[in-house]
Structures are given as C-alpha cells and as structure tokens.
Length: 217
Image 1 (cartoon, rainbow, N blue to C red):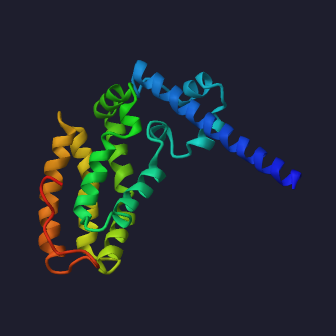
Image 2 (image 1 turned 30 degrees about the vertical axis):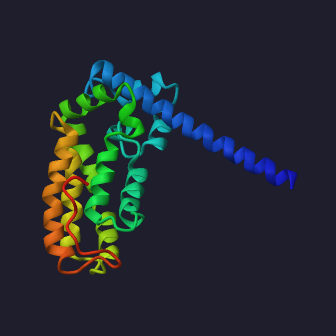
C-alpha cells in the first residue's frame, strides 16, 4: 500500500512539473511576442529564455510556433460540446451556445491583465489570426455530432454541420469588432432564427418544447 501511494504521489508530482514547464514556456513566448512582435521572435530564443532545449519545447508544443499562443484547444472543444449536451431542461441549443460564447468573453483567460494586448497581437498578426480561426473550426465535427445526437438527425446532417461551422465563426467575427459581446449577440440572433425555422419547428429536439428562443436569452 505504501509503495502504491508513493507511486501515485510521484506520478502526481511529475504531471504537475510537466504542466508547470508547459505553462512557463507558453508564458515566456507570450511575453516575448508582446514585447517585440510575433514575427520578430524565434523558437530558439523562446527556448533559451524559458531555460529548455528546442526539442523540449517541441515536445510540449508539437503543432509549432502558433500553438505557443493558443494552449486550450482540447479543453475548449470539450466545454463547447458540454454546452450542448449538458444544457439545462428547457434551454434550446441556440440559447446554450449563445450562453457559452458569451461566457467565453468573461472566462479566466480574458480577465488576465495581458488579454487586451494578447487580443491586439492576434488581430495584428495574420498568421495568428488565421491560426485562431482554424483552431476553432477544428471543433466543427465534434459540435456537429453533438447537435445531431441532440436532435435525432443523421451524423452527416448538413444542417447540423452548417450550424456548427457558422457558430464557430462567431468568435472570429466578434474578435474583430469593437464590442465583441454585441457582435456575439447579433450573430447568434441571426443563427437562432435559422435553427428555429429549420430544425425546432419541424423536428423538435427530443424532450424540448418547439418554441423560438428569446432574443434576450
């Protein structure tokens, strides 16, 4: 029993150390990018500043330099799917996704004092702007599957695929507007009307009332 506990503690420490190293590399990269610009900072310089080898850096960020800026891909996808599958009774899919997108604007990372500078860096750097959009669109299939499951439609349903794609485009759209919250609200309102007409009125979600979502929800 004692040996098992020691192994568990060692494993826990190892994972915490790996997480700390990953965070240190990402923090170092962001600091250098904000100080000097994304294009002016190389991977080797980031590794040296973070006191790790270049190979270690790529072990943690195998996707490349852009991934140093965006480090929550898997967690974002899981949270996005849960917003649909775990929504409260009586809440429609559009209402759930609007709440998720609006909540994303007030998540822990957006409250980071560096966030305004980070957002400006992304918007002013074409490679990062495109990577951010592509990163979100990678969740399209997972979201479309969740929508199909919740509505009893086929896994390859074009309505669910289109709704997933347009929903994920909203964050890129909102990020380029002076008032992101208002941009999300208006874009969601437009999509909500299409979902209500195409899906809810004709094929009510299992166990959900076929009513239109409130524009103020």
